[in-house]
Image 1 (tube, rainbow, N blue to C red):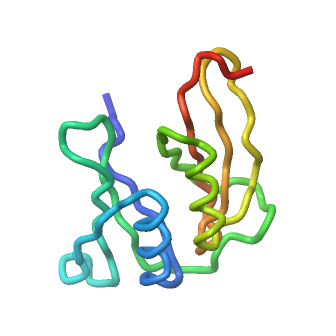
Image 2 (cartoon, helix red, strand yellow; image 1 turned 90 degrees about the vertical axis):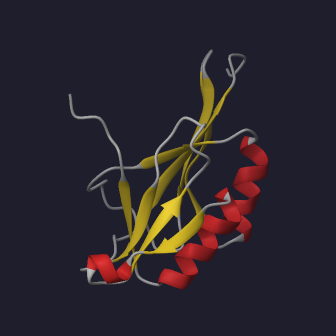
Image 3 (spheres, rainbow, N blue to C red; image 1 turned 135 degrees about the horizontal axis):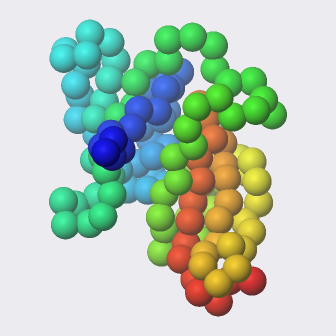
Length: 131
């Protein structure tokens, strides 16, 4: 079976992207540029005893996504404990709403955003009372 074990977010401005993901989600970063041969920072997204995976920010190798284009790749969705406060952090740190908060009835609240680099990502707060 091919289980997802790592992700890479392509970015134009590494420092801006590190600040955004660090401020919004509390991620920390490790410089792996020497190994990758390009600007590449490992993203530690949580402790080893939490469910989830780590990934990286890497220097974009082409044009950034065009606003409102169809998804061309994968959208990463982050689990959050408080949807509304996370959305506030996203907006305060330069992110934008791509698809507003909506219920997944009986399961969760979900929404999609644009990061400072033009990438789409989601946030997901479990809530069996969502409707």
